[in-house]
Length: 364
Image (cartoon, one colour):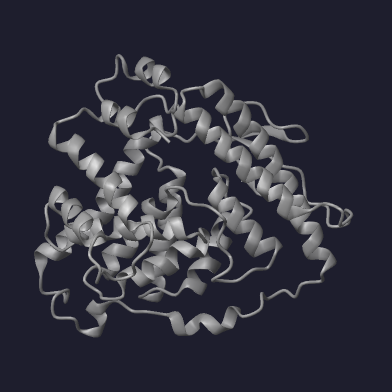
């Protein structure tokens, strides 16, 4: 059967809405492996991507009503894409184990602290505190933001927060895409949590192991959370098309590439291989150059903070590094990312309020 998706509005055609505990969900119909092969999953996935881009554009322009309609169409198209991909996979009689999945064990990497790196060895209490703060801060901030997650309608945002003492841990949770109980984390930290568990279990990073852990968690029959476009694309590639790393990631460049970083950077801060490993980690679920470039830029900032820089200083240093010719893991997108970071820095130096900064930089 297909996976569970949580939405706050009516289900697409052919689907049903149900409630489990404190969450509301849409249940997509089971995949029919006996359907004909005339359905082209690639064209359907392209339609999903087109609808997603159109919904994002509608949000940026402030047309949240149109965006909502487009998201509904996108979710219906996702169900059809799953159906088509399953039919193609069944007709090709793909083996239970994806080809090449056993060849990636050599990519396993343990942290420099385990290898004996003097700088990050366990004798530095301040560094350990920063590593712990990175993880605890990330999970707490994520839970604090959940109540107003993905509220793109700024008029609605103003209405919701008008009488609130703080937008943090907003009551009642009002995300228009899913319904989680107060104190729960967003789907973003659910994804980061899978990475954290995989890193701890192995004592290092192996992209193949992370891909398997991610697929097992989000396809489990008892998982009743929200699956975003990135995660759905990944699951379709792994479970239906039988793709293995490094080909299992979705054609996606959303902010998942940044919000999953804290466990990775906490483990490998100070390691010369950090940016290379971040690229491998991002491509497990988002196989695009843009996702890797933005993920690495954010990793440069977070690593700087963990290793002792003040947050603003870490951003400034990351901008300078992105413009150096001898920088590690260069990308053609680095200059554009540096310019965007400078625009954010200028607003920060001027004391711009967060809401005004969102309006200036874009809300999607």
